[in-house]
Every structure is written in C-alpha cells, then in structure tokens.
Length: 267
Image (cartoon, rainbow, N blue to C red; front, side, top):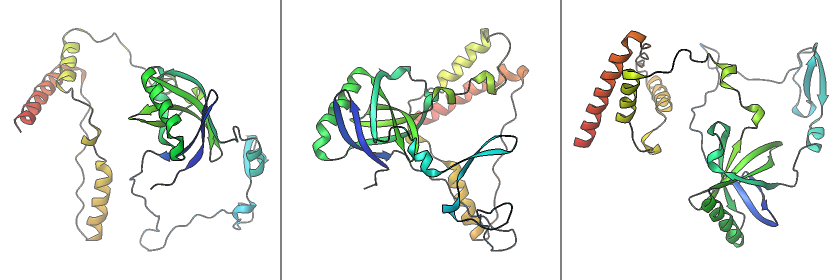
C-alpha cells in the first residue's frame, strides 16, 4: 500500500470525516545525473557563500526576498510556519459548485482521498454520492507541506478525488502571452472541409491508447549507447501548411483519415 502524503479531515456543515490523501499520478520521467564531458566525474551542487566561497550548512540558511535596489528582507523558517494558514489540517468545504462551471485551465494536480479508517466509510460514501447526484464539487482550502492550496473535491467512481486548483490571479489571459489570431472568421468550403476532417477523426476517449513514447525513446537511447550501437535520429517535424495549400491539405487529410479508419474496421 502507498503511504498517505497528507492526513486530516474533510469538513462540511457540522460533519467532519478523517481522511488521508494519496497522489493519483506517478512520474515516469528518466532522470539524469550530470558529469564533466570526457570524464566519469560527477557534477555536484553546493550551497556556497558568494563572498567567502565557503560551503554553508543547511541549518545556517535563511530565506531572503529582494525588495529592489539589491536589498533583501530576511525571513526565518519559523516565521513562515507561524503565519501558515489553516494549521488545523482540515479540508474545510466552503461551497459546492457546479462541476461543469470550473474551467479546465484551473486544474493543477489530482489526488485520491480515502477514509482514514473503515469506520469513517459511511459519511465518506454519503458525501461522495451526494456530490455525484448533484454534479457538484466541494471547494475547499488546506495546507500541505507549508503551502496553501485551493481545491475541488469531486466524486470519481465511488471515491473522492481532490483536484488542486490555481488561484484566479495565477491564470494568464491569452491576450497577455500570445499573438492573437487576426482576420475574419473562417467560413465556406474551407470550414466545411475542416469540419469533415474533425468528424472523420472523431473517436471515443481511451487514455490507454496513448503512452509516453518520448520516455521509451530515451530508455532505448540509453540501452543503445550502453551496447555501443548507433543512435538513429527521429524524422523532422512537418513544415507549416501554406495558406494557398490549405484546401488541398484538408482534402488529402480527410481522404487519408477515411482510409485509415477503413483499415482499422477491416482488421
């Protein structure tokens, strides 16, 4: 069994349910150490005083926030602990909102939430089923590892899932970060052909049909180098489609998609 990364209680109204939090995802990223090229010497990072050049032990380090003009306000770890919000270790539901109203851009990470002990299963399941029946999510804040999180609790196949959310002021507006598309809205034959392409590629959502092929290639690269084999580069990405070639590219894409689907059904 996995170990809980947080324990506390879910509170709504006068009901309080002891619970434990577990990560719902796992990271398969291939991690590397750093070496000096041409040697087997590891590269190490040290906490060094930039004035003296001497290494500083962790318990002698405090945090500093730059206020401008090269000046810093120094803060002790204990001072940050003293002002931490919600130190009671409670997921206190403040409101139940329509799940469909939460924009996906707010979702950050997912956790599974379980009852701390079997005797707490009844109120736990009651909350889960009530949220399923109403299609609502419980909005709550809690503190984990020295940080406050905004969360949405929802029912997921009979259990509770906790989704950490970004706060509103952490969300960037598209117009602030990218060049907005210009020109009139597409219409006519091009739009009809684009719709046909979308429809020809329509399918049911099946997450198991997708896998992390990049990590697979990284592992393959490591094994090939370990055995002294030649590494073969992947194909270059396709070039951008020109405006004049758009209609032809759409037509050929629709035909290719239909052919591909025909082969799948025949197989």
